[in-house]
Each structure stands twice: as C-alpha cells, then as structure tokens.
Image (tube, rainbow, N blue to C red; front, side):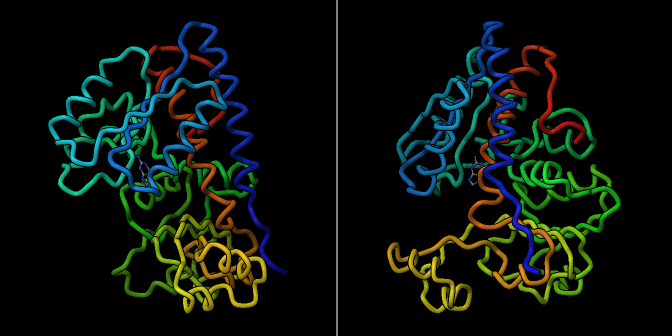
Amino acid sequence: MPAKMLDGPKVASLINAETAEEVKALTQAGLRPGLAAVLVGNDPASEVYVRSKTKACDELNIYSEKITPPADVTTEKMLQLVRELNAREDIDGILIQLPLPRPLNTERILMEVLPAKDVDGFHPLNVGFLSTQRPGLVPCTPMGCIELLRRSGIPIEKQDAVVVGRSDIVGKPMAMLLTNANATVTLCHSKTKDLIGMCKRADILVVAMGRAGTITKEHVKIGATVVDVGINRVADPEEFKRLFAGNAKREDSFARHGYTLAGDCHPNVAEVASVMSPVPGGVGPLTIAMLMSNTVKAAKMRRGVHLKTTVGVGY
Ligand code: GUN
C-alpha cells in the first residue's frame, strides 16, 4: 500500500488559526506583533520567499515591513540597519533573508540581530537555549517538521530517528528537537560511511540534504515515517525522467514550466514508507506558519506577556 501523505497546508492552517487568535489578543492589549523582513538585492527565489512571508503576516494581522537594501549595500550599513531594528519598539521579529550577496559578512550581520528578535532562531544564544531545553526562539523549518508529526499523530518518543543533513538551519536543530522529544537520534551527512544502513534503521527519517531524489526506497525501512525537507528545482530532462517518468501530472507541468519542484526523496520511497510528507505540499507551509508563531512568541517574551500557547509546546 502506498504511503499515507501528510497534509502540510492543513496543519499549517491549524497553526495559523491559533496564531491569529494570539495576535488578536495581543493587538487588543495594544501590543500588535511586528516583523521586519530584510531582503538584500533581487534574487528571484528570495523575493518569492519574502513575499509569501509578508503575505502570511497580512493574513494573520501581524504588522510587517519589507526593507530592501540594494545588492551593493555594505556590511557596515547592514549592521546599522539591524541596530535600528533592534531598538524599535514596534518590531518584535527581524528576518534577514538568506543567502546574502557575496561580499557581505553574513556571520557578523546575523550575530547583530538581538536574540530576543531572532525569529529564525539562528543566533548562538538561541541555539544554546534549544540545546539546553530553555525557552527561546527555535528555527522554523525543523520546528515545523515536529509540529507536522505531532499534529498528524505520529509518535516521536522512543522512536529511532535519523536526520540526513547537518546544516545549522535544518539538520542540527532538527536532531536537537527530536532528542528533546525523547527520540534516539542519528545525524548523518555527506561523509557518513554507510548512509543506506543508517537510514534503514529509522522509524522516523528526516531528509534535508538539498539534492533531488537522492533518498530512494533502498534507504527506507518498511513502514517508516519519512519527512522530506528538500525543495529542489529540477530542470534537467534526464534527471526529470529518473524521478518522474510516467507521472502525467508532473510531465504536463514540466512541459509547461520547464522545471518541477522535487524533494530529496525519490518518489519510490512512497512504496515502502507508511507515512511521508510530499514535496510540494509537505513541510513548506509549516516553515512560514512557524515564522508567524515565532514572531508572536518573540512579542510575548519581550513584553512579558503570558498568554496560553499551543504551538511548539514542550520542545
Ligand atoms: N533562506 C533559506 N531558508 C531560510 C530561512 O529559513 N530563513 C532565512 N532568513 N532565509 C532563508
């Protein structure tokens, strides 16, 4: 029986409805949450991401401001901008859309963001809070994966979990969150000796390596839950054929657009997994939902408001 597909948009809209309630309560108390999104230059993919983030703010009635410095902005100017946003009372969250253009010092700029406003959870202080299970701001995509599992009724405690990919944004915090949720976690990466053997042990396999269709049914234990975090643009006809030959819907879309979006899992993973998150329609919408909930969380923490919270509890 093919794997049951997790419904990312449905879970995201449940979370967004809860966040909207919290925004309403804060706004009534005169504390409307605000997010500043900084987009440097004109990378088309980043423009799409930032647009969907500010659109989500509009839908949830979160104040948002898009700041668009030119591609040749200096690191000093960026540091000054971040300091101004840090000092603003109406801004609770600061998001620096990555990647930044080449000569900019990304490390220095990200470090300048006040940890209390770091809604991406990238600052080392927030990384430390996560690792020691203290309250803080947690990276959005891995937190979204946990919420997707939790709200789909997939148990995490006592499960063997394998994460493929050790990025600071997804893989490492994902391993930490699963550990905090009492899974037994193995973190694999490009230098892992026996990737297939490691993956095959997983009850929960989270794949975040950024290479289309790399994880195949050979990597997956029968009955496992697979969360595919990859979003890859496949434009090469040979690669398209390897992944989607015979899939009429994909073939039609590829013919019309010249590319398709594929996860890190080959479609044949669905033959052995019992549950999996599709691409698109899986983790993507959760990332934005968690950014919204982090903005509200940042507002509440900074202003010492104690409202009932249902998103991201206990991690
Ligand atoms: N670029 C790709 N993913 C992300 C993310 O999660 N946050 C930010 N700020 N930029 C990104």
